[in-house]
Every structure is written in structure tokens, then in C-alpha cells.
Length: 263
Image (cartoon, rainbow, N blue to C red; front, side, top):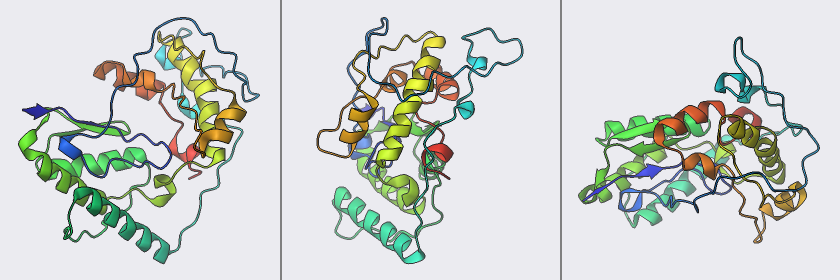
């Protein structure tokens, strides 16, 4: 039996990338299939109007080349937290201990940090290369990595161990590896409403937002037990691989790390 594993490095609160791949794959179940239709939501906006796409020479309105995620300007400025060396060392050790527990190992191998991964794309790149070196067919796709062809079920323990080691060597820096603050949750909400959804629609993907909450309610509930499960970027995950890769460059699911994390 061969498992086709897709490991999404999706920067949601309290989730970095998957440290271990149980049974050769991460928990990345498909969301409910979205139905294509017209927009119907009247949720409160952030106060900014939808951006005017950055025009490229010879590009018609709505073409992929007329959209630039780097041109989106947030109103929220994120100030990243600072960590001293001992805090970084403790963070690395705590993450290793958590990973060992998930691995089910009382004597995990010693893993030394080679370098911190500065952001989700760099983490995916480091994990992909490390897992390839360990003999697994890892493939990077933007902020994610997966295995093509899949990983045989007989290799699941070896893959979990390799994932533990690779994560320990190239762990996501705590600036990127912790949950979003309220300010970051609001920034992502703004990005989805002002750039991601209009960009996807302009490129032929008519995302519905009839269940879109207000910005205030989304942010206020985000770090509580009543978090509102609204993730319009799930639409990108439903696209065929080739199209998903193309659209990720034009309409990324999240704002650039430099914006989201203030780096």
C-alpha cells in the first residue's frame, strides 16, 4: 500500500508545520467542497476598499499578470517579538520533547539545530531537502511539501523519525512558529477580503463569502474557544496541483511573511 502524503505548512494559530507524519501523512482532510456561485456575504469590512490590481504592460484586467501580492498594503503594522539566546534554546528543546512524545519514543535521537527556518516557505524548502536526503520523495509547493510518488505504509515509522530529525535541524523560528496575535488575525482577515478573494475571482474562481463574519467578531473570537472557522483560502487547496501552484504565485493564501510577522 502506498500513501500519497500532502503536508500543508499552513500557518494557522498554534500550528507550525507537521513535526511528525503519522502513517506517512499529516492530518490534512479536505474541507467541505465549496460550491461555485455569486458572493452573498455582507460581513463588516476592515474599512479599506478592494485594491486596484497592479497593472502589467499589456495585461488585460483580470489576468494573472495584473495582480501582485507584494503590492497589497495593510493598515496593521506587526512588531515581531524578540528572543534572547536562552529563550531560543528552551523553545527548541521544548519542541523536541513534544515531538518525541508524538513519536512515541522515550529515547529519541539527539538533534542539533542547524539553522532556524525564517518563515513558512523556507521551512518547506528545508524540510523538502532534508527529507529527500533521507530518501523520501518530498516535493515543495510554496509553503507546503508533499510526497510524489507516495510513501509506502511500511516506511511510515522511518518517515516519522526522519520528520522529527529534520524538524529539529531546521525548526521554524518562534517568531513564525507561534499562534497569531489579534493584530495578525485582523491583518489576515483584511488580506483575504481585500486581496485574496478579489484576486481569485478575477482569475476565474468565484469564491463565495456569504458566511464571512465581521472583522470584529472574527478577531475577537480568534484566540478564544469560540474561534470562527472561516478560511476562504481552503478554495486554493481544492484546485488541481498545477493550477494551485500557478495561483499560489498570483493569489497566495496568506500575506507575505514579512508583512504577517513584521520581519
